[in-house]
Amino acid sequence: MEKRSSFSSRIGFVLAAAGSAVGLGNIWRFPYLAAKYGGGIFLLVYVLLVVTFGFSLMVAEIALGRKTGLSVIGAYRSLNRKWAFLGVLSAIVPIIIVPYYSVIGGWVTKYFADFVTGMGAATAGDAYFSSFISNDWMPLIWLAVFIGLTFVTVLTGVQKGIEKVSKFLMPVLVLLTIAVTIYSITLPGAMEGVAYYFKPDFSKFSIETVLAAMGQMFYSMSLAMGIMVTYGSYMGKKENLEKSVKQIEYFDTGIALLAGLMIVPAVFVFSGGDQAALSQGPSLMFNTMPKVFHSMGPAGNVIGALFFLLVLFAALTSAISLMETVVSIFCDKFHISRKKSCFITLAIIILLALPSSFGFGMWSHIQWDGKTILDIFDFISNSVLMPIVALLTCIFIGYVIKPKAITDEVELSAKFRRKKLFEVFIKYIAPVIVAAILICSVLQGVG
Ligand code: PHE
Image (cartoon, rainbow, N blue to C red):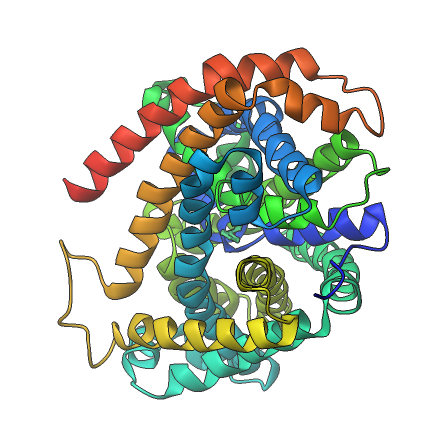
């Protein structure tokens, strides 16, 4: 059997994990949620959740991976055979997500290419996006480009592929985000949008705010799907685990906050303060933003190209972490080589990505409760499986293997400063809140 791969440095690990965390969720979901749920108050709740709940779960997952040196199925199994099913359940999540995430990654690639070749203006047309995605074959070409880039990186290996790529893409992503943000907040009239984004609106605060922030936190931090377990298994025993988690959080939350500053004021100026323009998901990214860039005149092409490049980088590093998680599961489970596992994973991704893509064109009649095929995959993974996995993980750690198993692992390298907080959250607070999210999201999704 091949020797298990590893990251060469702590910073390599942090950048790769941050690469996983920073993704489409930071850019197309976070700004919208902040705008919808009362600006500053949402930001405050979100940050509090990240440093308590998110922190505890991320520490737990990374420690689980590092302790066992295995990907997610093996990790749970090796600690308790009866709980092997939890590993399997976690493993299903990335297998479902990576294909449809790649479809969207393909769209981003296409828009980037449009802006770079000077065709950005066309994307501002009303029907441009819908006619592109409903075309049966065009999206597949861009899907292939996106999957190709992801595949080559993962195939090249953990150190030479994932770590190297993350070390380059993540700093560039930060610079691009800062550059576009500065441009955006200096637009005439932008300050009103900035105020709208930061000013707490208590009238919009409710339990729903907390649930929305919680759901976003899971997704954004790439928790409850085995990714952090896998990346943790490539982390050296001597590296400071707690510090790494903090740095990943700074990255993820920092980029989310900046994304809001980049998008909210620009959309505000463009739409004259109409909140509806800040809709969530594909329509913000692929309908509204191109119109915003178009309204900027000639500068719009450059800003648009930079914007889609940063989105592409964010999506790529996330897709890489998803694919790596699946690849490592097959390697561990079936004792096959990395290369073989990469090709099997690629085949699965293609097989599942095709229906997601066709769901907007020739298979658009296949719907469930108004959801397209892509939305169905998204609903099953994010609204159903992830909260279940998170809940069971808390129970598993809090009551089956006991928090000590994790805190000992963290303390191999350095004192665990927030140990008490970790224990209380994993055992008592997290399970209750996750159960609430699960119930709400299933009711919302089906209702
Ligand atoms: N964390 C990523 C984001 O914020 C999304 C993601 C989800 C990445 C699942 C990998 C796996 O967009």
